[in-house]
Length: 336
Image (cartoon, rainbow, N blue to C red; front, top):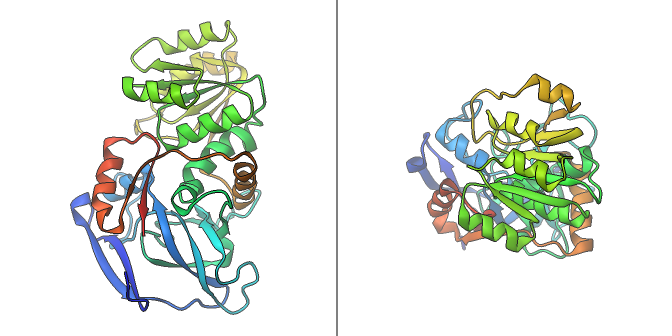
């Protein structure tokens, strides 16, 4: 990537990881209201894998550049840009155009249908970026726009997380581990559920208070560990029939944040459990820029460090996707 006039990127020419190919294009110039960012790191999400397999809720137009989460440096700004100057460090916003409040119908996600960031350079509207954390390097900062914000938005912005609560978290992927870190930051007890013995041990080492086996009667164990109260908040990253089991472990007036689609089938659960517990079940689709900026402030203030499962060079993007497919403890990141 030594030619400063040429943009390097990875794109899918067809569906399937075998159709991931490297391509070149001229480096674009920012138009009015746009910024040109030199990408320094991009992190992958499970959504990128679904888009690549064509198993997402809609098909991506081909060819497409994957990935929505990046950190980089502003190289140039277009006419009328006021938020940024050349040389400033930024991170992308996952839902471009969602600044605060309710998402407008004009907002779109980066990495399809918006521009993908698995490239040496990317053009963004000036409103589609936030200041990068001062305390994090590019690789760590790139993990924040989707996974970290999803956990923060569910627990803090919507769930009003506070000390003394119990948070039940499924899995050990990016969202789950950020959920663990944010819950600990707020003084909550964390119970995690994982199907991997190795990952259960690593979650305990990271600070989880209890980690339960997925094939166990974990709803009953959650009730026992909370002296019959249940968990006030659940990060439901699995979906499907797992929602019903999460409801069995929920405290009265508790909330379940539905985030994941690992089980892509219809969600199911007992209406009696939902009604009896006065449950709030809310779908979480990441969050807005204002929440991202508050989260970055909290990360800087408290010195929180994201869990990075592995870093790959720009030439190793197929290996990064293979790692993502296998299931990672934390985030998979590509360095530019």
